[in-house]
Length: 415
Image (cartoon, rainbow, N blue to C red; front, top):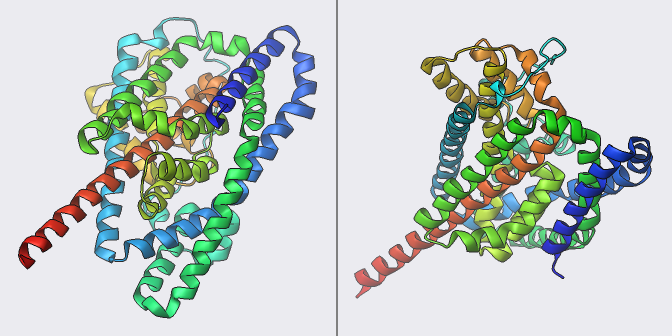
């Protein structure tokens, strides 16, 4: 049995066990969660997180050094960021349209008197952009500040490219370090089915059937929007831009998607996402090493979908009619917030608070969806990392075509 099937079995068993215990024996769930489920999930997540910083550091250095030409890197970087911003805008617009049609906030009674949420203040876009440059790169690694780590690693990659043969030994050492980390990723992934079981059992068991039933229609709308976006936008990217079969893409990336679902963290899933894209989808290491770590930090399509549905849902519950101008404001705010809140803990809810504030909706409404947000966070993480991989495949195919075109032009000139 391959690893993907084992992870799916762990996921299904975890969900079933968590739900059954929550309904029939909450006290037994509490005990098992304390001594079995949570420890299993925590051990697995910590082992994966242990490898995130070194793999990002080594991968970005090797990716930038492998690309060589700074112009090429700038072109790839611009395409990557543009793709993420466009798909984020598409995600939130599609989600708002679907929520408007289904109207989950009008089909049920919701107690808004007890709803409360205290939003943390997010940094401005200017602060985020200035914060990309680390004053202490080692402190950035300790704190896990991905944008700062990416920036520092890119500088090292540039330097290695410029120095050429002088630094061949260092490049070889970094390649060997990368091989060591990837070996450890393969070893840790053997524990993935057990970690997935623990994580899902904790998530489903703690949220409970009553919370899922009360917010059932809202959850369904979010999930439908996530599925549509994945198939239409990412599948369309693979089919029409990368000129590949979407079924090949989704089948090849399935191991990372299932792991992303259980971990609820793009960063924690990053080592596996990169390995899967390189081994199963044939994305070159230098492309994958640059695009996917960047995507794990700034690509928030799944989060944008949650924000779109949540904004319409909260407006319907509080009986607020959003004008067309307000809807446009929501889209613009969400796209800009995806940059401004990159790498901020609890980013999804902070972004949602910013979106609600921009159109004068009560931030307290977030309290209505907090109960089942952990479950939806799993689904939107899976979508986010799939978007990173789709972008990597697209750019890899475009670069291959460009190289073939340049090679054929050179042959023609020589002839």
